[in-house]
Length: 167
Image 1 (tube, rainbow, N blue to C red):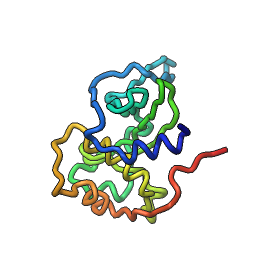
Image 2: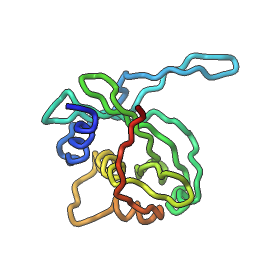
Image 3: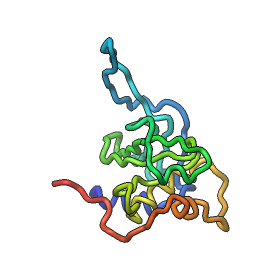
């Protein structure tokens, strides 16, 4: 299985295909903050294991921007948004890192738009982030909350190649 096949498998999965485990994941990222310079460990707060193949997992919660500010974020009741990483693991090896934005005070997860002007987002990124957005919530097949949130943000979903890997 190559990386594109792995991502396609994840995107085609449903939230019911994943075992959600909340709490520290211990796949820490280290950084220095200061002054004075101090070493800190940052961990994801959630992990999900793919039930049909436990060698596949996703983790999210490490912040890349504490206060993500953009006009589209203000369309939600709580204007606080945070830039967060979704890390994808295969056999415990980190194979991809996808940035996304946690909006409405952390209640909604949306893909990172290509820029904050035209607000285009790739369908693949939407499908991936939708999986973790719905985890832990009761299924509501008649309710398209995620699509409504994309629309509320003013996003235009485009069918472009996603992801694009640098060679």
